[in-house]
Length: 407
Image (cartoon, rainbow, N blue to C red):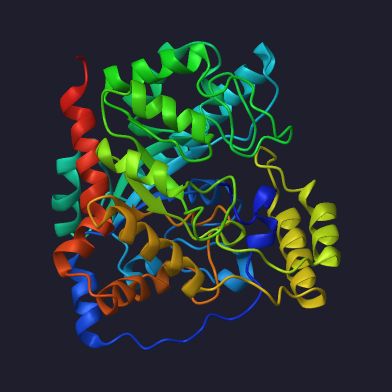
């Protein structure tokens, strides 16, 4: 999605109250720490470029609204994941493409700089087989991904530049239609292409050639149909939910879930509250956020003083207009357990949309991740099943893309 501090479309999902306390049994914590745990959609790279913010330091989700840093990853037992290069959708012009390209390259370099600055704690991963040894060494796993292919402009060969940088998963569209694909949430509520555009089909071919996993999250159901029909490798939904639980355009129905699984694909469950269930309207809060959001665009460089001012205003909104109807951990688990019921533990994973709007009551930041392991155990899933859900499935899809590249 996008940075929680920078607001954007994540306004209604931002945090307003304390996490629900839950004591995790020691045996469950030990199991959780044994697992290789990956989140397939970390928007945390947006935090890397915030003034005065460091991934090395522990932060408070209720103070600065960030959800992932090294101390919290260690505490919550998150071994790593796919760190997203997210670029806001802009105009479909040559100037728009140029600005987006430059922004995305710099964001990718911020991820690489994070790794280079602390090789004792972070390591770049380029193949599926890299994850286990990095975790065994006590380091955090850094795969790279693209959310919104808009920065590629009309030159699909530019994808090779990002592949060389480390990108191994790429989506197509975001909140609006772009040059490659229809979005599930375009403001027009009408399709532009009825799936992938001709250029989008060329982009998919390039992904398959390079060994980049296609990501259908944010794109329309018709785009997913095209991906399943045309991709030579399994498809990933890096952060999505289930329409059967909540009928939202960003979620997918059971027929699509089954079709995804039939082609070897995986749905990674998100925790973006607005996609989990309907919430009571809070017009005053929404208006206050609307006034604030214009000053917090993704590509605007903030001074430390300006960031402190905006954070203070953000906290004041929480005080004046608290969100009293936030979705909960149980709402998140309802989506996960439904997906598991429909397609089984070989085709479900975890992509919570941290630092991009994800997070619900009881699952506020990465410190709360052991609750998911505990809930899966309580639901009757085995350690083998849970390992697949936490990382085995997404790594299998990545390995399949690697094996098929160049063919």
